[in-house]
Image 1 (cartoon, rainbow, N blue to C red):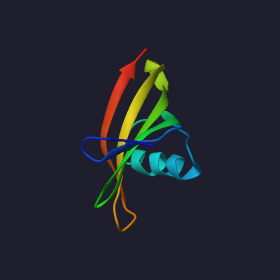
Image 2: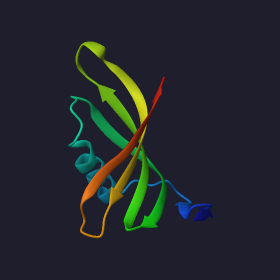
Image 3: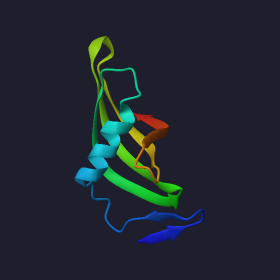
Image 4: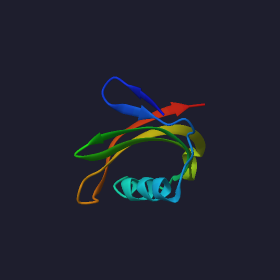
Length: 93
């Protein structure tokens, strides 16, 4: 693991676990869309009041605007195990 400024830890391997998949599912419940997110890389973590996760996902958009996007989700899981989507950064290709 590599630590960078701000206390963010970058894993040696960006492996996605079942826990990471559940975090993405829970965080996306607040979104009002019909897309599907497939997590494929854990980019980093940061210990705060809980943990922040940066997870890279392939997002399939359905409906009239069918497309694929790469989205990095910044997700917080607090000390009470509540999950919040803090930020979503989209990269279209």
